[in-house]
Length: 314
Image (cartoon, rainbow, N blue to C red):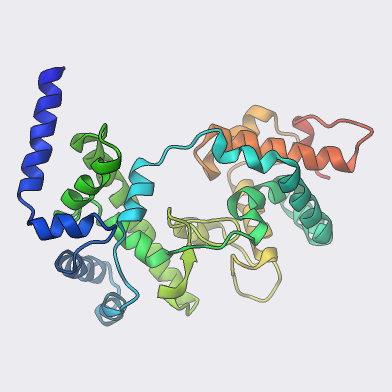
């Protein structure tokens, strides 16, 4: 085992030895050096043009001063691990009060959505609470930059710098582990990047201005672009889909769940399985059901509802 650790360390040092000192130092401030960004830019132009996107559009986006790659995004996506603390606050009195007020304010549209899709209004509100604090959470990361960064995490100009940067804070992370994670994330993110560009072109968005999470999701329900294309729907009848609009967000959440098998009368195990499709986390599913139960209980304090009751229409 010791020999393996030594070999891993030597491999990492050999990898870093190939990098100029200026590049390593630059990477340590959380940004990639300009020469690395230029090479990645050319790769992205080639890749996206080969997928049928207008090269002039891609060049204009990548030439914009707002475009940059982010080591912080790579850190969060390649290293981050959730814990119970990640979700516990969504079940406290303050969050429950926010969710209850939101439900009462939008009760009419939520009940209409519940009747149309068969998804309890409490579940819809719980998801919007956890995903974006019911729209209060301010998106920080430009979606285009996030997906560009992730899609190139295996790039020979990017990976060595990312590995060096991350091992400063996570010395236990091996090069092999990080390389596998980067390869998987880059494949996923490139598909999401293509979907996001399709959305931007179709909806005439200011592509570089759309902000979302560090994972590339956006809007109140925090849909990734491929989920937007497949499941987002017009909830307010204006013939447009904007996931920062509350009505569109409610309808889109319900549509997603229904498309994955949600219906009245589901058992807890079945609900958890569908919620896992929304967010691949057991803790996430438990939090959604716990929050929904609190909202259900508040509406009928004389009769404590079970988790199963959440599966029924209101």
